[in-house]
Image 1 (tube, rainbow, N blue to C red):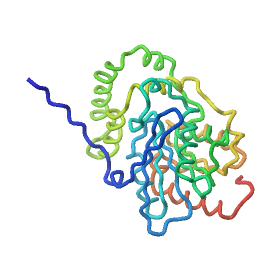
Image 2 (image 1 turned 180 degrees about the vertical axis):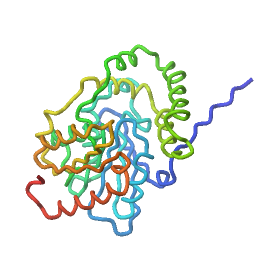
Image 3 (image 1 turned 45 degrees about the horizontal axis):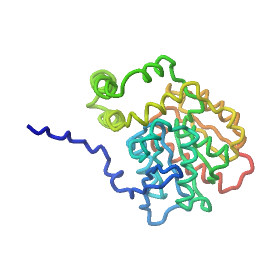
Image 4 (image 1 turned 90 degrees about the vertical axis):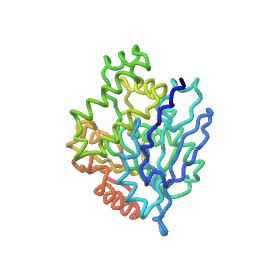
Amino acid sequence: MAHKKKQVKDYRTELEKMAIQRYFNMTDGSQVRVLDFNFSQKPYEYTILLIPGFLTVFQSWQRVIELLTREFRVLYFESREKVTSKVPKKLERKITFPQMAYDIKEVVEQLDLSDKKYIALCSSTGGNILTQALSNKLISPTGAIMIGPAIEFHISGLVTFLSAITPNFMIQGVFIPLVRRYMTRVYINKKEEPEQLEKYIRALEEGNLRKALPTFRRMYRYKIWDQLPNVVTKTLLVGASLDKMHATEETLKAHNLMPNSLYIDLGSNKETHSDPLVIELKNFIEKLEKNSNNMK
């Protein structure tokens, strides 16, 4: 008796489906995807290059992109650890953060952004790879906005060890279903916060463990504080003092180390991914237009 193939749910939002999907070839033969949102009839002169965090799914940025696309062209960059990338099998377990930073360079060049005005917008791990791209002068955006950049990772050695010795099929078949059940019954109110639940379930179900787990293990004791003084791009650092996952103290530390940075606190993670962020982005562009020599 033939077994029915499991139906894979399409978690994409309607806005996500409207984007033009573009794949870019990297030097090592990999391909990364960029979602191109170019809806505005009279867009701002600035393009927004959005670099989300580790395994981040589109729903996390849905509201911001919905607002930005009314006035800007938005390019949503998906780094190579994500399920959408096409990485040769021999390279899937060898993904590094400097490599992902170089991917940004190659995408910017192929998009012909180098001679145009654009803002690099990122959060969390996206801040790590963007910092490396800026510090090593791989790209030169007009400005950058970093929300809780993960300059240093705080990954438990025990968790790193367990992820290395546990077979992927056990993680996929046992651990992930247990986490999903826990989230739906204990952690998230699926009636009051269905979108948040959908976001986390999508991240669990779509993740490619061959790419994601080795990248996760490389976070152990990984930090790039020494690169921050080399970032000369005018940068807005956004803290969220109520968000325990992305420590505000470390965002402030990054601000003190970066010569051309401003710092603001938007309170919660929700505020940094919704309307208040878009308001601050426009304010930041106004400051850039005034050509101030020093952001502090």
